[in-house]
Amino acid sequence: MFPLYDENPTRITPYFTYGLIGMNILVFFHEISLSNLQLEQFFQLYAVIPQELTINWSGEWTTLFTSQFLHGGWWHLISNMVYLWVFGNNIEDRLGHFKYLLFYLTCGAIAALCQWFIGMYSTIPSLGASGAISGVLGAYLIWFPHARITTLVFLGFFITTINIPALVVIGIFFIQNLIAGFASLQAAAKMSVETGGVAYWAHLGGFVVGSIFALGNRE
Figure 1 (cartoon, one colour):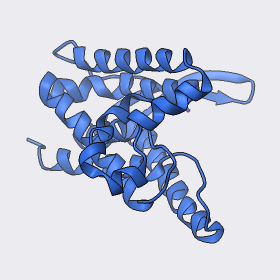
Figure 2 (cartoon, rainbow, N blue to C red; figure 1 turned 180 degrees about the horizontal axis):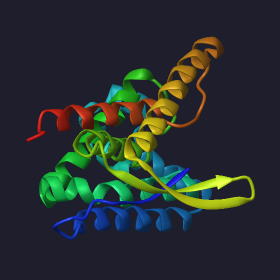
Figure 3 (cartoon, helix red, strand yellow; figure 1 turned 180 degrees about the vertical axis):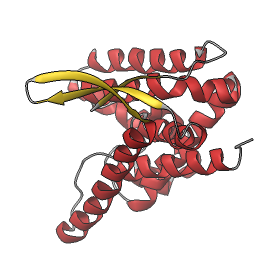
Figure 4 (cartoon, rainbow, N blue to C red; figure 1 turned 90 degrees about the vertical axis):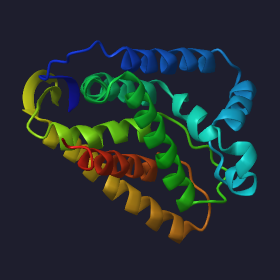
């Protein structure tokens, strides 16, 4: 199941949503132009390294923002940008351009802190727009609970599109990440070593922050 677009018209052109998508794509093209060593150094500079943030907050806090424009692969980038494309325009329309940008970056930063809190001395880079986009999804669910999303559905060898409630699309996203987040905690507890993977707790943190903000601004 893959969202394509929603049914809600917007009053303004979502320039900042387009701009964020463009910036993420440009940064990713820069990433794939680097050698493996250069890419590792690039991530060390601009991704959140929990251990470094813990030890040197004053020198590393900016990575809470720069990490939001980094991605670990094509699928990571494409899936994030599709969700931002589908859901970001209505949130930008609701908030206005500059307030939307502030909301987006704040959700992403707090999401990164949620992931940092789970493993403060991890040396595994945390990166991606997922936390910020999760904040957008959380706000969308509160402000547009009855919206319907045109969604691409894979049925074996067949592909079709159906209109389903946004609640279902976002609910599945949230539940998947909640289950995976707890599973990652259990795995870490059993293995007692660092393991890589998706920053599920950043997703959940961003989602909760976006939802709380929207609940407080429902008028």
